[in-house]
Image 1 (tube, rainbow, N blue to C red):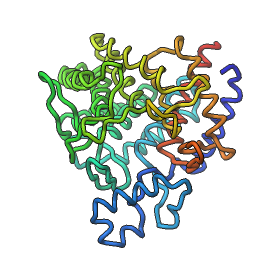
Image 2: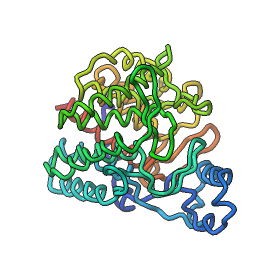
Image 3: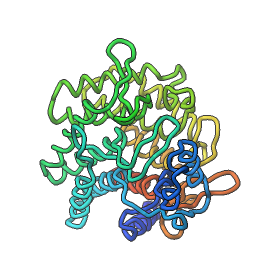
Length: 393
């Protein structure tokens, strides 16, 4: 994208919206926080009604949450994404203001941790009923924990505050000791999504590998490297011949989508770099080929599924920027990222600065979800602007 000033203007509008909201917001999956729902015993005790209620608010194109008592909240994963974004901006243009943002968000993230497990860990501020499991509010997950711990590592590089590194190392104890494991071929295994389930979700297990490998790069503890590799082997064994991955092992997890594919590639690349292990490069390349060839249209639309454009979900274009950056493939795919960013800004950013949730064929969901949309696009902008500034200079 040649005109960086327009991109910077879009970013500043997004940042203003997020800071005005103090990084609080609603979430696609926060329906069970409804004060109304919680007052009706037969609803809140029913798996069917919990799932239906969440899906109702997730799918509605208008935001009715205030009518049923769902408050805007901070989300640990959202705060982590904002923190990583501000760290990237600080590296590009160090200032007292950006340093203060880094420290404030890092300290807030530390305060949000769950202290009831083997190590520092993080979850979501709402009960969550999925098809595979039910998780009470603040149940720690490998996903939220990895993003939080990796963001604290990003902050450690800038501040040299040893406590941030200690919390990241502590999070590895949560991954190693509290998550369940599903055995694969040989000594490979998959980490569970949380301590309360035994589901096999490939991107979740790989996020565990990503965290272990990043901390291994600091501590050189073989235990971390070995466990990270065993999870990587399991998930690479699940890659299909065409380079794709289903979401997970369950029969109802067999879809192939855009941003979870990006997660897999990002995590595999992080593991390979942190552990100096090139054995999985062929899986990364095959997965990357599938990713760029199947999930993005020539004009820059990010397809949700491998076989359908709609819905265009704001998560997908943001993850493209992150994936290409983590794989260090800007020279090959920079033009693709430019097209995707251009289309996304033109079609999914509002006059208020925030990005809408999903654009569908005949209508759109314009709800400004903070974690799902704004935090991801904030991180994407920080990476994109950093890369393009480096290229111009």
